[in-house]
Length: 452
Image 1 (tube, rainbow, N blue to C red):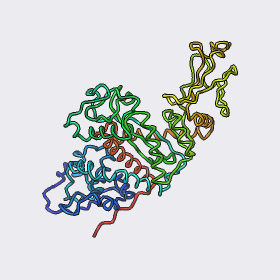
Image 2 (image 1 turned 180 degrees about the horizontal axis):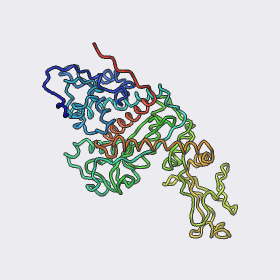
Image 3 (image 1 turned 90 degrees about the horizontal axis):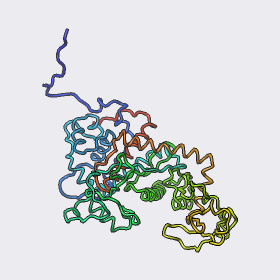
Image 4 (image 1 turned 90 degrees about the vertical axis):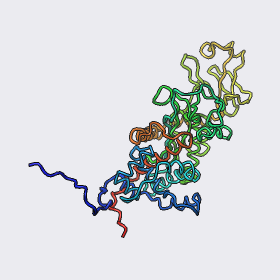
């Protein structure tokens, strides 16, 4: 027979304990067991006034943000609604059944104020990295670096062609635009000085106009990761406009910061060909880090004529010898393309039987040489080793992290504008990814003891 309806909701008192309804294997319970934010209040204390009304607990806001990035809820308005309704979210955020979630506007106020002034999101990220190190997840020998393009919160259909915009006083009062203008006047502008941008977004000018994203053209930021290849722990993260030169610069910043914060210096680092510039390779070798990176080499020719590798360099005399045994010399002047030019004598080339295979369309042969060519040559020798092939295969782990960020965490398009907004989102996503790796190596914890 048909049973009676369930769920009588007219009771006045309920015997209910949040602790008992959260399963032991729940993701948030496992994260809670390895996440310690007890230090956070003291860290942010200088950024709060000693008088006035009590403010929202900073630990509550950080925990809510982590919940949002765990479950792809990046809208803070929707996040507050979800915390109100979801028992597991309430438990993780230390909210009781009768406690009210903070208003969504609280996050905006704190993000633009206390959180960025104190760089607290990076501090939280680094504390999680330290937890991974204590758990033995970081080997510290081999790193990998790469970048992935994330679409900015800027319409590709609304853009200003060219490199400059006439900002009004009202425009300059907006944070993303004020941040962009301040960066142009600083030592590290978001644009390349030698190559002005083709288009600028009027709402987020720091975002780069790129063809590397999921659309044919769009405005985007690069999510730069530096990972330890032992267990794919993200050691550092940086946001840059989607420009290769900025991504390479971010690599140097991340390596130096990891060494300063965690006393970690890799023996070798893997990356794709975009990081194989002479300047990058020279920087790594100077710091005794073996670059397992393909050399960015534009000296090879595909028309059947001699390539640069067919010429022999004599380091003692600082000359090149061509296949016919003739000498190419340089004036020692570093040209605007950051190379030295080695030139053969016109008389040698005109009388040479190999001219048609060497320089059929010019009077004499020229060979460009990078100031860091010795580092490039050293990297070419590494490319023949077994260790290089292993590192190249393990480097693919970083691609899985980007896939997780985009498909699982929903980080395909940014919600915040400006370089600082992109940095905030990337730090939160990387923190969640590291927490998931940490709990995978920790046993399911027992229930948290109830307070008397």
